Length: 128
Image (cartoon, rainbow, N blue to C red; front, side):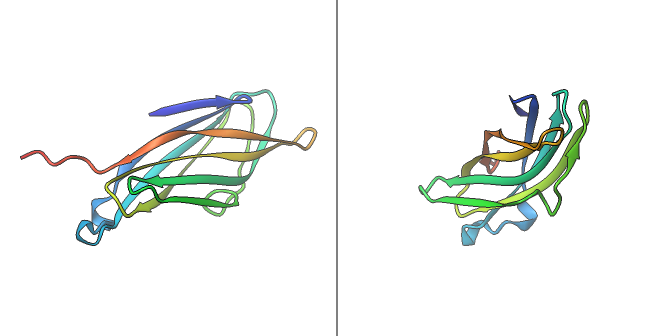
């Protein structure tokens, strides 16, 4: 599991290859990732936006941004966590993702960014 702490908010990432949703003969590879957002600060925070950069091994780069995560803008109290699962597809067997969340400190409305650690997306090697 990869983790990174920015401004008192810890992001942890786990990834999973999804063979049942992939079609390797058509160069379609599906990955799921589980994100845990832990508020280790003394302030209540709200996740407003997500910004992702997705890379594949062919050099293709995609940017994805939008409000919240999986349809939610969670409010996370000090000492609490929010977890969600989402996914990404690639046209190659390996790639990576990184990004950041825009969050709001609710006590004063201050906006700040929380970095999402770069993480690999890899199809497991087959052992014969």
